Image (cartoon, rainbow, N blue to C red; front, side):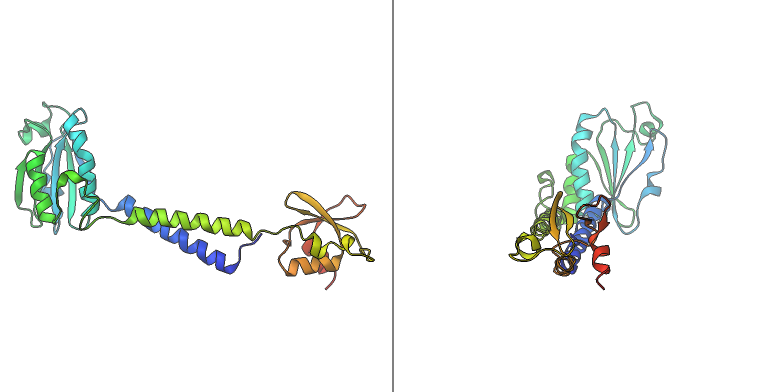
Length: 247
């Protein structure tokens, strides 16, 4: 069945809302890895007008892996004022580890909006200062609650639920077999002028008169491209083509 104009508008609105929220949650954070072991000038990675957090880490470092989700949440929740630049030291003998004299990881450096170093050291100390700076609460609480939280997932869930309702309503408005309305064989004393059988909901219904098919099509009880076959013939046409012969 062809959706009604109202259903089409509802569907388009839901798709726009869901895609917008999904795009927002997927692209808000600004996290980049600026080196893998090689020397790098971290001052070139600072973003003017934003706080910049430099994260010295390694893939084999357990505390670094535990810290990563917290940094992701910070970057997402405060994407308008915070960027994160990651420095992969690879190992203790790498050029970048020697350059910045890194002796333990995770090791963080926090720069303000003008490029001034605010804090440096272990994750607990630096993130505590960062959280105070951006107006958060306890950095260990995941930042899902409180000021600045992202509500995009709520919109996505609501949009998907509304989309499910739309499809349910559409299913309820699907054409039913209108035997009591348009099947002339069931009318006492009437014989169809040209017995047409129509494929409806994967079953062959009929026979119908051409006038009945026209009425069914007008009332949207049947679709125009539904397959139709005259009694005793093997060739198929469509309901729309049958009705056109009446005009």
